[in-house]
Image (cartoon, rainbow, N blue to C red; front, side, top):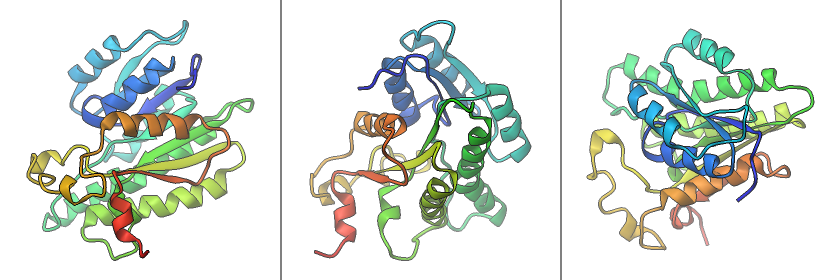
Length: 243
């Protein structure tokens, strides 16, 4: 793993689950981690306090923000200040038959805010440093078929804009994404939403969250990589491709 001492990373939705694993991976490389949360402030504070120490004067910290509120997102970015890396991990899963206002909130969190944060932190980049963003997609977004749900539509839009932003913001900003296969099911589904999926994958097992975290750290810190979507999916994306 790379030496990220002296670097800062903001990870959205990092208090629990995959975000917490990603936060620990960056901290183990020496980075100072800003743990974003919405309602899980106690978990965010505990995680920040438990991470391996980073070189002074930097430190780990927790921030709270409702990502469905554009003004709050802007204020959070300004309060955090410049970072070297951004990981757009926070996500919202809403059933397709939910009220339109909830579907709009899902689009905001899963697509619009990640793009807005990339632009905000790109503008704050010191002139002598590069900035790198990695978004968490979903292996299903690698299919060229029509989206099966509003959630998938939002993630596919973020996939499209990953390429667009990588072109637009080069050469001093890099934009990439990781597309995990089944790691953690949506909270709303418990284990039911993924129970039978691993057996259908080429590797016949669920994705290890640590593998996703390592992929995120690699893309964030690899100077030669931009505009890349990296599947970490036990071969799930192979099922979408013709031989």
